[in-house]
Length: 55
Image (cartoon, rainbow, N blue to C red; front, side):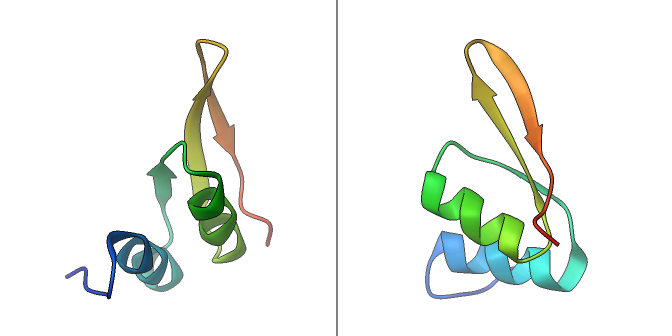
């Protein structure tokens, strides 16, 4: 189950507990997800980009 104060908090919490990939274009959320051990899927210049976690 996903819970938190905001959707971003819920996603970060879920990634910390379960790992995973989150699709977003929000730069702040990208940073939080990568620092939490998750990877980010985004679109840049009409290409899909997978950004691995910082861990």
